Amino acid sequence: MKELRDFKAALDEHAIVAVTDPQGKITYVNDKFCAISQYSRAELLGQDHRIINSGYHPPEFMRELWSTIARGGVWRGEIRNRAKDGSIYWVDTTIVPFLAKGGKPRQYIAIRADITERKRAEEAQKRLAAIVTSSDAAIIGKTLAGIITDWNPGAEVLFGYTAAEAIGRPMTLTFPPERLKEEAEILARIGRGESVKQYETVRRRKDGTPVDVSVTISPILDRAGKVMGASTVARDITERKQAEAEVLRLNAELEARVVRRTAELEAANKELEAFSYSVSHDLRAPLRAVNGFAGIVLEDYGPQLPPEAKHYLERVRDGGKRMGQLIDDLLAFSRLGRQPLGMQGVDTKRLVQEVLLELNLPATGRAIETKVADLPACQGDPALLKQVWTNLLSNAVKYSRGRAPAVVEVGGERNDGECVFFVRDNGVGFDMQYAGKLFGVFQRLHRAEEFEGTGVGLAIVKRVVQRHGGRVWAQAEPGRGATFYFTLKEEAKG
Amino acid sequence: MNNDGIEILLVEDNPDDLDMALRALRKAHLANHIQVARDGAEALEFVFGTGAHLGRKVENGPRVILLDLKLPKLDGLEVLRRVKGDARTKMIPVVVLTSSKEQPDVVECYSLGVNSYIVKPVNFESFAGAVAELGMYWLLLNHPPN
Image (cartoon, rainbow over all chains, first blue to last red; front, side):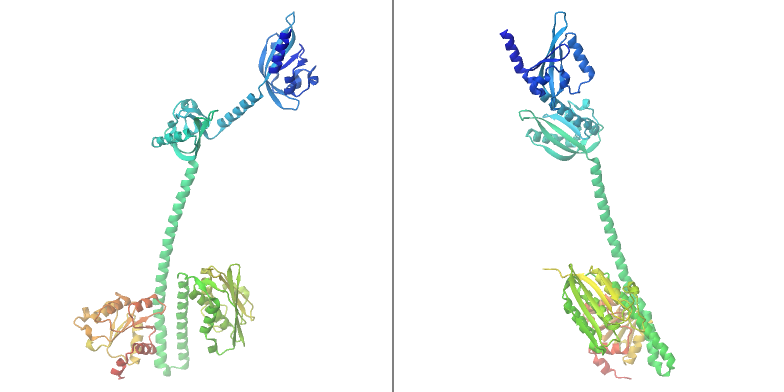
């Protein structure tokens, strides 16, 4: 009897034990049963095993269990149970029926072992296997000798070999002949426990075609931390490679187009220069004849001519002179677009004073008041900027004719990295509805009899300012003067 | 025609410009002893005594060359280059007749050693000015008005 108690003690120490009556009512549980199920003995006794049923197993499973033990047979299997707090545990279960005299079960003894950890590991492995199986990437295992041990469906798709064809063969199966030496290097690194990461290379499919791949190869360690093989993850990067090649091709094409365009522009520029030269020479020759001979007639036969004839000849000469001026201005304007900018720091105030001096205002005999504020230094081509100031200031002087005194005001300030300048006069001004025409070539807002000019001055201003990366605009009112503004870059520091 | 007394070589292809230049020279009383060349090649033949002017001595002048730049065959710049590049003729003053003083040619003319330029149309004042600039009073002194 003591021997039997000792057996029971040993069994309780090792296993989860429960005893039920033939109806399945729990008549005994040991401490281990209470511990794993989290129920107290009092809660368990008199209940049946449904109290720990997780609902995981199908009804057939339970029927098969019951019919086995009801027939007096021993049942073995793995059962998923639910503890009181809802957590899941797995038990390896053996149920032994104790039979009564008539051969009917008197009671059942269930002996269980906790296999939750093992089941979790199995499930994790199953999940991993599912991931490997469903991955687009080729995932391959190989030994340190380079023999393929694992080959997922991704690898089948990428390389064209089935797992059955690939496993057991060397990894070099997928190498093009000229890259065979890569494998020795890879295996050497893996052998040293190193990985090869995101390495772009070319592999060969079963049908012999090359495929661009990105490969990561990592050592697989055994429990002792020793390298036992390698895992290879390979991705098809054909599309990316093609996109890269396309980008390169487009870039090259763009570059070629730029070169071609530049050559075309240079040719057009040369043509324009030849045209300008031709204009200045050939257009001027007949003009000289018109002017010259009209002048000669006036000079040699003036006294004999009726006053009206003389007047008309003067008109011929004036027209000729005017055309000469137009040609000169047009040439000057076209040159502006082509000549390179000699950028440097420009002392604006000095430049403005120099221009005012050259305009020789006292010689006009008019009362002209000039107010020049402190002007910020700017960055630009001094010769071209001088042209801008000359045109704006001479315009201000011209269109304020008839005012006594005429007031010409020059100002400027730094604003957000650029300089804003203005030239203001108290002259005739203009209607803002024509402001759009102001800066066009040969556009004039006043009749030639009122104010002389060819209509190129402001066009030159605009072109010079624009070539400097600036803006130009005007504000005016008829009879109340005009203000012209333009911006330039601030003088570069240092 | 006795070429030896030539004082002025006028190189001009445009008949209008030529007439006006001749008239201005006449008005300036410089019309005697003018040789006209209608292109660059003809001008060089005259200066160096070749071609149509074979036998003419280089040493005999002209005393001054009035040179248009745009010419058939050889252009004015080339004529200038040859005249200024030859030891026997480089001392001859050359006045360039130009359509516009803004032309890039003008800069090149100076680098080739041109003595002066006149912007067309050519009038009496231009000639007088150019002549004065060249300091050729002898021309006027030796050839008083007819």
